[in-house]
Length: 351
Image (tube, rainbow, N blue to C red; front, side):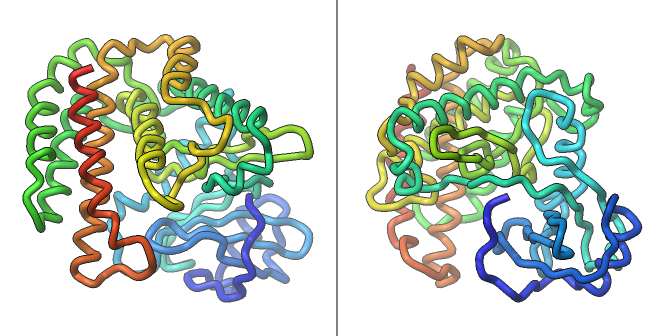
């Protein structure tokens, strides 16, 4: 995995309790001489690099404090990566899952450390040059196609989710999220919801064959190994939103992130698509369409849904900013980013 930052504290990770469990459940681990670094934290799942001085492992657990189990389900992440290991989808090797919350205060799992970088910003990609950026963005789409071509039943994931009514649940779920963050009238959001709700039944009748949905697919959720001349995606990570459903939602959210970055000023959460050489959304759709068996006839609906989802997420952030619950730069402009998103979503439904 990416090189850990210089963080010495390991909140949420009691090495004295972890050691005996590691020795019992992870092949080759003695559980002694352990040290660890937190390499990703916050409101998402916590990720640690654990080592005994010779071998490294990655440990994932939920955030500290009260969390919704369904939002930080360690069993879900471990299950999908374990199932996908024999397929063409690159994932880390999983070693063990701990359901016993008495060990670390929450369920957790241990997997291999994959060397790679979760590229997040244009400035990180510019050194590669346009040709390598183009190849890497194409590779990102190829891996997504590989994921969506996996038959869930063939890898033991037939009970991993409820694909029936998936799109309908998504439309109404994000409306509830938007309502929970209400602080101003957003007529475009109301119109987008009304049109999505009116169309979703038609799309589901002719919709895409159910498959494995990552839920948040983008370049900073894969690990890329870069040499002096080549770049290779070594692992898809961060499966906390994975389920069975309509895989075209993954493609739509990827493109919507791209639209959000291209319409933003300054550095956004993920703006790799602004790097010279990155495939345009038309090129991304064409590449996916050429390699996948899925029907993109109603793809405008999926883009509208993705815009609605991201708008609901951003409005939640904007709401917390107004309540003084956010810290750091950039939150003062989040509210304005919602308007072009909603407009783009409405336009997509007309396409």
